[in-house]
Image (cartoon, rainbow, N blue to C red; front, side, top):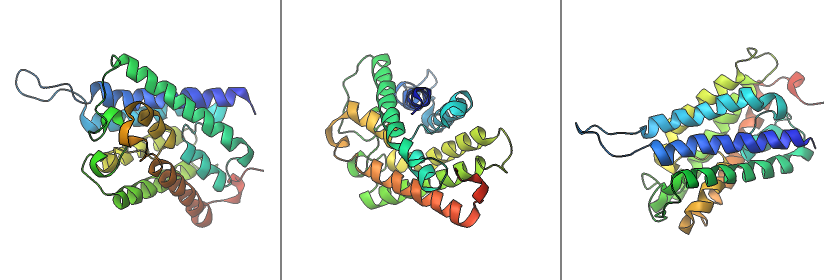
Length: 242
């Protein structure tokens, strides 16, 4: 295992959590201006922040590790024949620890706040039921995370295929992540990434930790499903690893 690959996955996932979750915690909403207009990025701005972190991370670090930054992506690429299974566990560990490090930085930058872990979306965490931004039930949250992650992997597999437009993969993947967040922030606060969900749940605590299983199981199922769909219906054998 190349230590540079693990370092790139650690730093890339740290950057994703710092950029995306940092935008949600620090800049999504900080009151109203003098004329009553809302200040802050809102969920559209947070969606863009997540996409931008993936775009920048993909171009800065993708040539080192492939730029997964997400255990569901690693699982999907493995199932889709694009990544060796022997490397997957260490990649996932690096991603989880990178995510937690990114969440720690957000926590410190926010001034180590008291977190109301009974509130929906506390510390940019993912949840269902009372912890969902719109009160979405477990089943709704599960379906959303599976479908969104499956679509994410289809785009990743297509955008990184050998016949795809050279150099455009990172942009396509980042824009897809923006779209995913625009759709699913109201439902689950958008995971599609178990490392990102673990990182924020560690700091939110409370019922976010017992709910964390969904944000591992559903994205991994979705990632594998999306990769298999792409490989079976759209893929080319020349993209498979040797």
